[in-house]
Image 1 (spheres, each protein chain N blue to C red):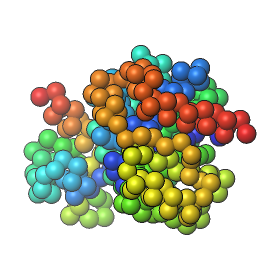
Image 2: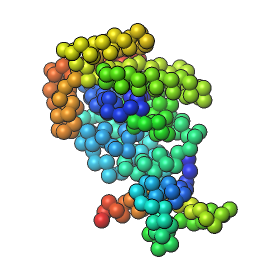
Image 3: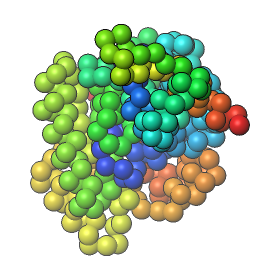
Image 4: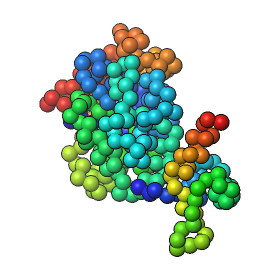
Length: 251
Length: 59
């Protein structure tokens, strides 16, 4: 269990924020982490203070210009990155049904060099998002604690189980739901999570990421939360999630 | 994965009309060839799209 994708087709529920802050929390615990930014908007790439116009990037890898091993960029946060580029839009257009496993193949030779490979997938039902899903051992579904996102969770699970597992030998994959933007002082957030728990039971993680402006500030300052304000409840939540990932991988 | 895109795909990526893509190929802004089986459809190499995007960025 080492390739983890953060996926949901709905946008704005915390995929990028969760990928970055989990990566930072894992690095803090001494893990070797590679982050893969599949989203052509390049938010994760920018979050880590990298210029998304620069090479090498995933476009080079998909085009066969560079092998993935030589396309890795280093960051000052000690998170290694396969970065995004606006040209990934062209890759999205060029990928055809049957290309779902491309990323999985690119990442295979990198597995021994890392403890965790985290994939930030783009929103929407398109080939790059499917590439991210197909490459994963574990799929984390970040869902904001509101009804719209819960419907999105059901959609993603149905897609993975009915379509992807049917087409490819991926049924070893596991799915877990991570609630984000959780407002514990409202009655709505706990109610949403309680309802979701009736459906997905133990697949819902006990740790919840609190709603906070620290995440917006963290992106603005191009610094993961744990390095910005390590004692903030948001940082602690990702720290707990990272511990869960480590124990899950060891189990 | 396709190595070539057609005119509508490139038009969508560049946010221009398909006729514009056609005109750009004829003017040499984009590289493209006709599909062998049809004189109606363009095949545009991904690398040519890449050149156009990179030139836009450096402008």
